[in-house]
Image 1 (tube, rainbow, N blue to C red):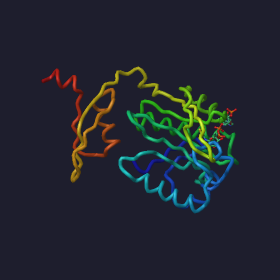
Image 2: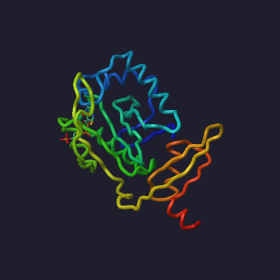
Image 3: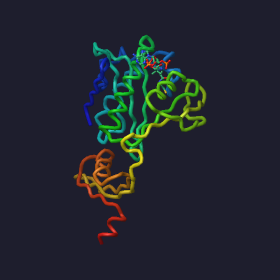
Image 4: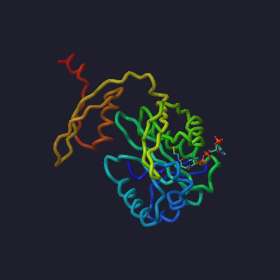
Length: 233
Ligand SMILES: CC(C)(COP(=O)(O)OP(=O)(O)OC[C@H]1O[C@@H](n2cnc3c(N)ncnc32)[C@H](O)[C@@H]1OP(=O)(O)O)[C@@H](O)C(=O)NCCC(=O)NCCS
């Protein structure tokens, strides 16, 4: 899905543009912001390259992630929010806001927009987030959003010259919690490409089909549940 724009009361989440470079340096070039992220502080040239890659990646299909600029009422980038797409309809949430705007509720608003998009539009079953054990601001934010801690991963990320642990959090889709999930198998045939075989957990045939399109792209899709197929044989 491209382009994506998510609008809240004060903020808009939109696709990155090349003219976001200067504003993005207030996030990725600031030691104070990057200290609790999984990468090291970037100089302008590195960020220019990364921004170009992020812009190109947003147009790939199927899209591996929704990495969006968080912008204020003047369309200035003040942070970013990311929903990485994982296996079995799971998403991974990430966010950062430039230092001068901390404590105004912006991360809360941006994360709420992203979660809503993940559950309602991307039809995710579960969203997770990983946080440094000492990042109490982000942990309180996740708790406010309904996330609960799942445990600690040791040596999860290598930043600033050392391996660091993460605390994992997750949030199940409240509407899909408790739904009967079954395994579907199928094939996707996209013109000019070899047939792809897939296996996916879903709560309906339509959902399994949507998941295949999200993962592999539009094509001729056959999908079935093996138990149902045996019964109708
Ligand atoms: C973590 C981070 C994203 C929080 O951003 P933020 O915009 O300051 O977050 P919020 O303003 O929504 O919440 C922070 C505080 O402001 C308060 N707040 C102030 N005004 C608010 C409003 N209008 N609405 C909601 N909360 C508000 C919140 O209650 C919260 O208080 P608390 O820390 O006592 O719980 C930011 O500190 C950051 O970018 N850190 C570096 C990157 C990072 O750590 N990312 C997360 C990796 S897991």
